[in-house]
Amino acid sequence: MLDKMTLYPVADDVLFAPGGRVVIRTYGVGSAATAGGALPVSYRTWVTGVRDQPRYWSWGRFEDACHGHRMVIEWLTGRGPQPAVAAA
Image 1 (cartoon, rainbow, N blue to C red):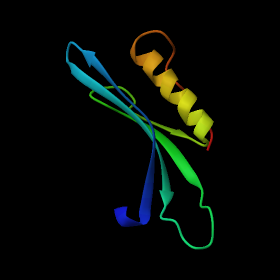
Image 2 (image 1 turned 30 degrees about the vertical axis):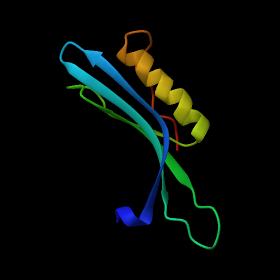
Image 3 (image 1 turned 90 degrees about the vertical axis):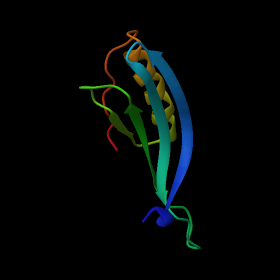
Image 4 (image 1 turned 45 degrees about the horizontal axis):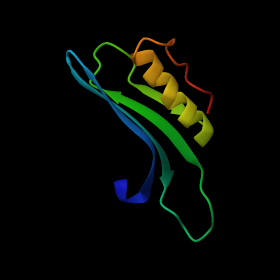
């Protein structure tokens, strides 16, 4: 199944906390390219290294994914509210 998907990296960040490191990774996921043309891409932000917290957000567009990635970092560092998932 992975051979039929294409990952498009958007942003990667690492935060160091007293309990260990937290990795924030935003990327686009699309089906493997075919000869027919462009296929839709869905964007996701995954957070690993945080316990008892939401670790996944989904975004509908590239611009939303970039902005959402920054919002997740602000939330994790205590400078902003928890990001809401954008409607896909």
